[in-house]
Length: 310
Image 1 (cartoon, rainbow, N blue to C red):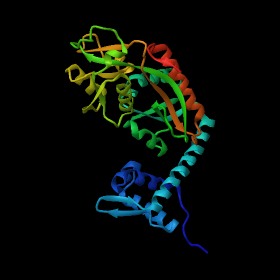
Image 2 (cartoon, rainbow, N blue to C red; image 1 turned 90 degrees about the vertical axis):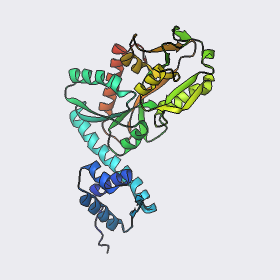
Image 3 (cartoon, helix red, strand yellow; image 1 turned 30 degrees about the vertical axis):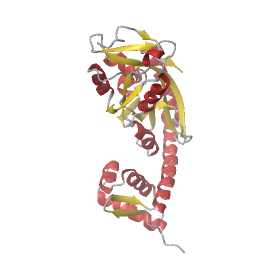
Image 4 (cartoon, rainbow, N blue to C red; image 1 turned 45 degrees about the vertical axis):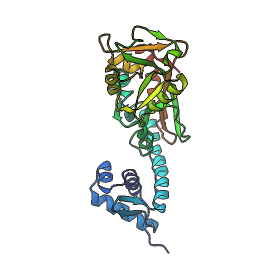
């Protein structure tokens, strides 16, 4: 008869944190426990399954093949457990309580204050805890339970996530105020041919879209000067280092007529990025998520006429 102890959700939570950080100290900080406590939970999990899950190497923490498989299954189990909690909360509270919303820096700061203001006014029992993350980390953090839902650029290919489309956001060509095209409001697509175009670095989804637009219009993507923020891109454009594509929400919020950057539309070839909300299919607070999505659409309709509802 086996004398092994039972696996606990706490052990799986610690395993997910360690698998994400691959560093005992950072993993412990992530879940708010001491490093010895986390180490003890990992050791207890190894004893429960009878397998070595982690190797400590000079280069850092390494998961064994068994550790990688246990991590994958742990993420599934914890997702289902959170789904039970969310479902119960949804049944008790409806659109109330605290929901953790993840977003990226090129989107959240320009629209979420309007959403939060409306929710506070119309649904004071519902609170959003907003956390900005690197764009390509959002989906991983959603799986790991750091976020309940995420505001992201679409498409998302992961079939384990539920997605609802919100709106399309136009992209404008930005040029320096003294650029030959700056006096125009609208340009023809062929005018982009040969233009030097700056982009955010590849950690942003917008980089992929700008790369695609450069191929489509025959523009030249400048890879030596990749921005780390939309502000950095705007400043480089203003200094005449190249042109770029800026999202409408950023333009609406940050650019003024006195700025050293002009924005132009592309005639007959409007360019957009699609924005939506995503959550784990196993999550139980679907009605609250859909309520937030519908409120976001109302915000877009009322406050942002330059956006296109989907």
